[in-house]
Length: 427
Image 1 (cartoon, rainbow, N blue to C red):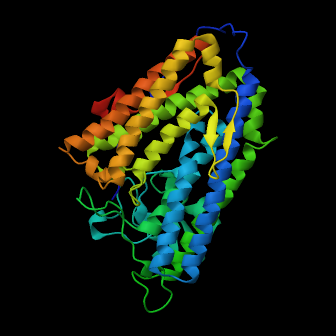
Image 2: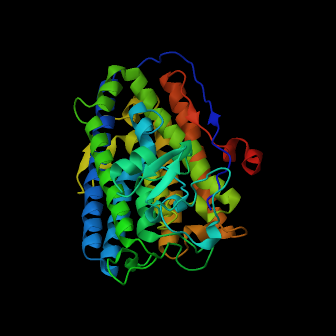
Image 3: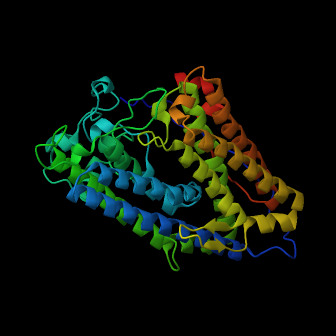
């Protein structure tokens, strides 16, 4: 079973220097925020468009199950991750995103809640009595003393009943990773020397005597419900960043707070979330379950595109899925007008991070799976991952300097025990 360790702590990075004077050639805050919102609208719009391609591929798989149809659905899922990961920098500083994000990208998950798992997974625990519920095989169950009729697997059942059932965060029933599990199955490779992804057979969706592991019709229903829900959730979020949308409006209502939102997202994703919870923690635990995209073995791409998303919002430029570019006045322009050397340093640190994350991506694509990098004693893997961790921490220090130079107050970045209090990880 998946075991959860040490919740992230909050690392307060407080700067209170008052309002800094703006250089004459600096862009207006509202222009910077327009670009930031335009990139969000484009990024979530691309995520929605590619999620619809996942939806179409899933419908094709369900209609005519085959190895080729499963491969096509997996390929669509992998493509859909590229724009979505670039939007994660909008977390932490935008309440509309923070209140919503757990429905679409929560991880790690106790996958036994959803479907069959290997016997090595274990059973229910004191921490999670639903860790092996297997709702696909369980049309009726009890939750908090109430009977639940799961005969029909619908988006509402997933979002309103199963997701975070019993208030337990590991009970992830919706979003990218639930879909990922249903497409790939468990990753049982551990630190094996082959490909690190799961190997669910296409026959898990066969609707005749070829069905493997039982309940193929309900498994298909769950996959369809989860995919439909992802599409509707992304459709909602893309609308929040359109003209007149709640997220864009909230951002523009207070331009100074808007700049703080940009930097809070950059610093929190760089430090506590990516360097800490997604990278350093997994290396400390030598645990392949701590891979962000563990079922598909796509973690190297998730890390890279998170890093690219941070750069996007600083330089005010995003390359859309169709190759077109969204660009405009940026935080980089504002910093350059105030302190050109600091802007050059910030862009250099962002480039260094992408190089470090790119090394992980290149190595994984050449066959050095991320779960192998996490193996205890694997010096090459540790060097690759720590190269990314160190670069992310280093760029966070420069983000702090940007905060100070712009005179922004009370900015708090997310932290991680793996970075701030390593001993607590093993308690």
